[in-house]
Image (cartoon, rainbow, N blue to C red; front, side, top):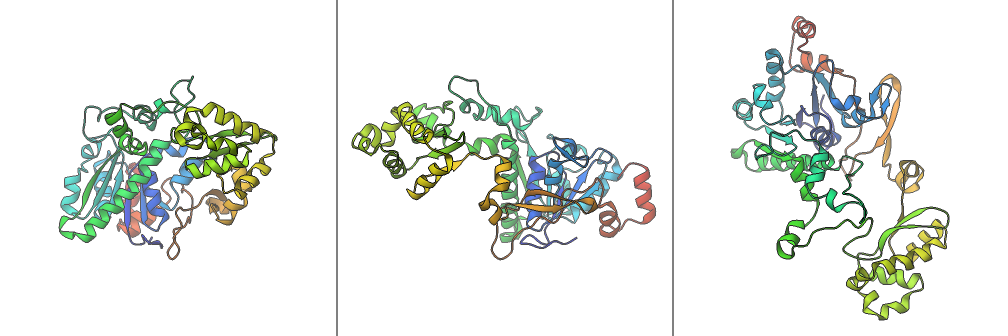
Length: 400
């Protein structure tokens, strides 16, 4: 069960459900960690039945479960608690996202785990954190996307606060979780006398941390982000513009020199003698007029023409893509950003590759999320040494 890649030999027990915690574990598995995914018998991870399905299994699970070994354990049963404890005792990392207190209720309190595995790194992912007035509240990413300040600043000026259509808070926590695990492991290896670690990661803090220096701006200036659609408070032009052939292009000029190139390209170079157009502050004061000028030029041309002229001028532009467009694009193809991943029955499924790419010891996707309990025999009998009789008894009693 040893993998290859830079994290080969690292053993992770993934007890997470749905997205944030399992994504952190997936990122480690992508780079070679041996990740043992623990799910409840019969029902499995919630992600198995979330959203679009391929062959009766959600694409979310097939993605989140990739490169993982799938086992089932009923941690409400004392025998299941002992079984998962044996897995954890042989692991470097435990990842879980139960409500605060639930891990302890399963006789898996961090201090108890450290008594037999003092080097263990434990990543605990929750909505609000292990402590604080809201720590016992139920939470999905939606709630922290609302309370973090993101929704209030997202949307059209005349519209309501707008939530994202994808799980940005969970994704942020997944990446931050993987980073925090590797930070803790590095600290453990550099300072072995300090042993293991317990990491308290909340979706709220992962999301809040994405939003830049809002606290500083508000504290010093009482400034708050406003809903401005696709515009930016840092520069203009920055928006989505429609071409003659009904395509949408994203143009951004956060750097002043790029804005000057765009004004010259669209035949408005004479305006650069006026500080209202030659400076970022001036263009933001006149953002409606700036957008009008850019849209008039873009709207009179086809998309490929605009992209070609912008690229030649060293100005920033990109088309608004769907996943169908991505599948047809030569740049995505040349970098193998989407790969064919094996499934059961000799079938395969397209999914995003491992990012980032390492030059000498890269990660890889070896298989998609497996069937529930697919690796019970390998893990429980071969790795933990259960006898055939014990294995069959545990199956019969719903322990595994």
